[in-house]
Structures are given as structure tokens and as C-alpha cells.
Amino acid sequence: MAAIAAQRRYPHTVLTAEELERRGEKLAMSVTKGLDRATERPFRSVYNWFMKCFKLDADECELHISAVTTRTSSPVYWELVPIDNTTFWKRFVDVSLRRGLPLVLFVQAYEKVIVEAQTTHVYDEATIVEQVVENNVNEVNEIGDDDQAEGSQPVREPRGEVDEGEHIPGLVEQMQREDTEGDVHGDEDSDNDDDRPVQVPSQWNNYDHSQLLVNEGETVPWEYSENEVSVGAIYHSKIELKEAVQRWAAKSLKKEFRVVKSSPQVYDVKCIRDDCPFRVHAYMGKYDTLRSVSRIEHHTCILEELEVQHRNLTADFVAQHMYSKIVNNPGYEPKSIINSIEDDFQYKISYSKAYRAKQKALEMRWGTYEASYHNLPRVLHTLCQRNPGSYFEIKHYNLPEDPTKRVLQRAFFALAACINAFQYCRPVLCIDGTFLTGRYKGTMLTAIAADGYAAGTTPRG
Image 1 (cartoon, rainbow, N blue to C red):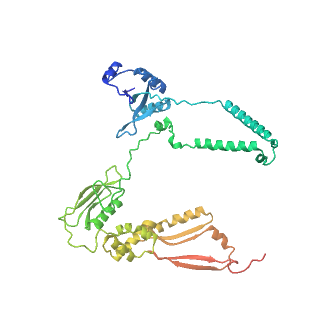
Image 2: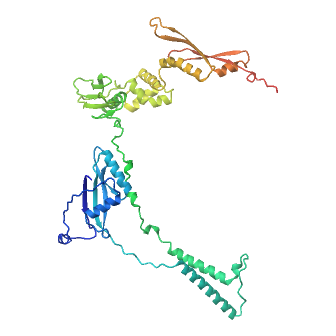
Image 3: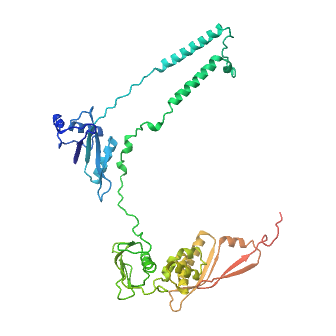
């Protein structure tokens, strides 16, 4: 054992210094003793060893033993965990040795509280049954004698017939007597259970050392005020950092700034006026993945009048701000975007900026046109692999000025199910075209054939 702390307490008796000295005890006691094979002993052996060390009588005193342990490595907070059986003692030793913690126990001695037992009367069940049967026989005999003395009819014996108990006086009185006794005993047993003391098992107050966990993490560090940027603020990505600075400048400060430096590691902005020291500097460390704001200088320039437009309300910022509304409603018009920005920031944006913001929001959700055309060959190839028997063909040409780049001219695709069904259709094909209204225009042609059922004929069978 690395250390043992002991304390003797008498919560129910007040002892003076003279009385302690008469008992041969001291106010301060310090004893150093060794315990062989402490980690291998059961808890009862350790408990008895402490009783012998403190020279305590088991009939008069008892010990409360608690382990001194910690749940975290940094910072360290020591706490007392009660131990009262071998299982918790072994777990405490195993966890302490595995984590390199000292084996420290806090031992407290108490005087036993003697509670006088209340005297109760115990009756033999056989004796009670015998007395009840004897009393019932005597009562029946007395009733029979009285009836015969008065000249009444003889006592009717039970024969097992239906409802015959209602006509036998002895059975009727016995049932009434049993009902009365049941009501009396029921009232005696209807005490409130809340008034009785509840014995809580001792192991419910103990800790399970086998499930000790160290949680040194923090909550999400980049959750800050929506319209403010402060020193020490941490952001998950550069996009979130830029959006926070732009929102702060447009919604709260009502002033504009210019970007001095914008790189994957550094983001630095200043006021558009040279005589104003406003500055926000954020960086990402060499081995970090988060952006941290390290310096903020506030505005000293005076806002003479409120501007109609704000240079920091860029198309990217508007797309981020209006993303959910545009994606949920692709028909959201640029005029609606202009009105929404004016309601939120009290600034107007141009129609072209609102249109570009809408296109950027759609690209954020669905991707660009170039990426869609670039992925078309791989999508068709995957469809043919998942649907055996399907067919596709793509025709393209190379750019004269850059032979390494190819331009899509046309693409053909047919599912295996459609190919197999065409042989049962009528020998007439209908071609239907749909114009593509995207950036690169074009036409999508569809071949359609009709079978006998679609033509309105009725099968014969």
C-alpha cells in the first residue's frame, strides 16, 4: 500500500481529551505498518488487518473503507469510492495498477449503534389451527344443544348440494364470522408502506471500477454567435469563416471590408478606408484542421449614411444564405431573392447577382453542367453492367485548339427490357423530342413503339 489514511470517529458520543487519555488514546495518531501481499488478499482479510492495527473490538466498532481514486488523467480530481467486498477490492487494485495510480485507502472507525429489538410473540401454527378447530366444534355443539332444548328441528348435515349452506345455521354463522375476521385483519394490514424504512443494498452505492472511462473531449468548438466574430473563435472550414465575417460586417457592423490575403492557411481582411484600423486575422496551424481567429481590431471610422448596397454581399454569400429556399423550390425567382436579402440585411443586390447566386446554390446541390456531361459515359457504362443486355454508344470529337479535350456530340442508350419488348411491338416507330434548356442546349430523342393492346385490340382466347 502506498499510503493509508485513518480516522477514528464517535458520532454518538462526545469524549473529552482527559477521557481519551484515560482510555489510552491520543488526539493525533500516526502508525506505519506493512501489509504482505496486499493485492492478493480478500477484502475480509484487509478489513481484519485494519481492525488489528487500530486495536478495535469488532463488537463495539466497525470500519468504513473507501478507495482514493480519480476518473480523469488530466486534470486530476481525487474522490472517495466505498469498498465493502472482495470484488470491488480486486477491481480497485487492478484499475490502479493498470493506470499507474497509487493504492491509497481512507479508513474511518465508528462505534456500532445498538438498537434494542422489540419483543414479539411467536405462535405455533399447529397450535393456532388446533385451537380454531376446537372452538368451532364447541360452538356447533352449543348451538345444537340450545336448538334441541327449545324443541326446534334437528341440525341439518351438509350433503354437498347446491346453495345448501344458506339453510344450515352453523355454516351461515361461520361464514359471517370469517368475513368479520377478514375485515379486521385487512384493516390491520392496510398500513402505509411509505412509513416503513426501505433497506437499500450496499452495492447500489458503489462504483464499478471495470467501466471507468476518461472523457477529455470538448463540445463542438465552432458554435458561436451568429452575427459576431470574436478572438479565439474556431471554425470548421474556410467557407464558414468567410461567411461568418461577411455576416458580421453586413448585419451587425454595417460596414465594408476588403480581403488582404486569402490562402488555405491565412484569411486576413481590413476596412476599405485606409485610416481605419479594422482588421480580422485568422489562420490554420501547420498540424491543425480548424481555423482560429487570432486578432481583431475594431472600426474607428464613422458611418456618415447607410449605403444602399454592400460590397461583401457576394453571390457566394447569397447562395449560402438562400440555399434551403432555392433548393426546396427550384422555381424561386431572382426577384424573390432580392426581396429576401433586403428584408434580412437592409441592402439591395442586383438582378444579375441574384441570378448567379441561384445558379451557385443549384450547383452546390446538383453539381455543374460540365460535371454532368463528364460523368455521362461512366453512368451509362454502370447501367449496362447492372442490366445485362443493355446497349449504349457515345460519339464525340476533339477540340482543334486542344486535342486532349473531347466534346460530346451525341449519345445512344437502350435498356435490355426495351430491346426485348420491341420484337413484340407493331412495326411502326414514333420519335418524340424534348429540348434541353440548360447552358449547352440540345435535344433528347425517344423512340416509341406500340403493341396490339395499346392499339385498342382485344386478345382472343
